[in-house]
Image (tube, rainbow, N blue to C red; front, side, top):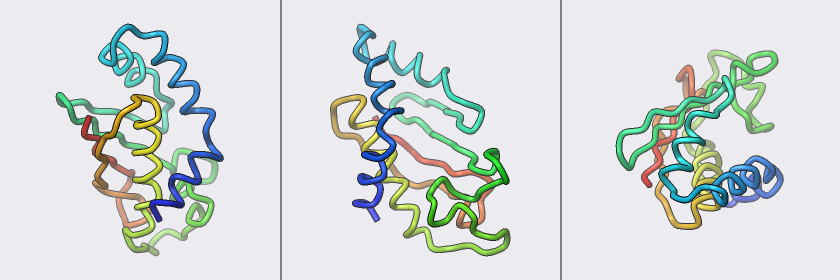
Length: 127
């Protein structure tokens, strides 16, 4: 599933490339984080506590209320939940995304996910 997340990022690279361009223009990582964390679309939100960022996103706010951004699970019916194993793909995507922007290793943990029954997905990013 980790390899799947990395492959997905190569297909969806435009967002990361745009963020990398913003990062290049910032004098510090802190300046970049302040910009990035305040410029998110309605489907995402961030909460920062020091070196930890909780990144939430709500796939149901898109179109017909999809359950996941992954095309394999986007139309998962309500009331049907699947293993958190599938979410390792998204965790790896988030990790590769942020590592690509910041240019250094980070750790990402899964909090909760919409395909396992939560209203939104939560990724815990350790800077």
